[in-house]
Length: 114
Image (cartoon, rainbow, N blue to C red):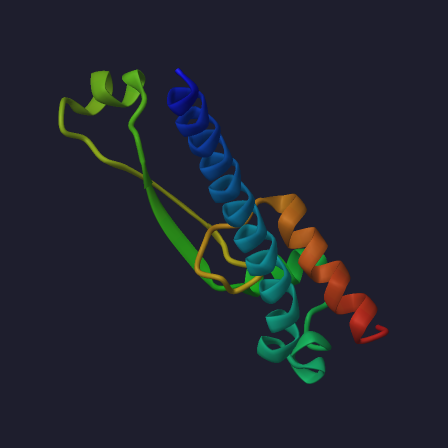
């Protein structure tokens, strides 16, 4: 009985440790991506953007495949594929939403004292 409790406690501790490691690596990745943006976009390049809308428009584009909705299947048949294209404002290879693009622009704006 005591061995089972010890094994259960060990398993719980292991799960908690893995969760903490995953959380830490996610935080480090986010920090690295925000630091790297200054290495990717120079002050000279940033100064060419008229505003945040221009920055988003000029950012690289990323296309992702998404699940088709039922209306897509009804309109185009079984086996239809669907994709979305959007901006990669932080240059990490993933499509960014508008708040993320705004945050990246603001970081650059503050850094380069525009």
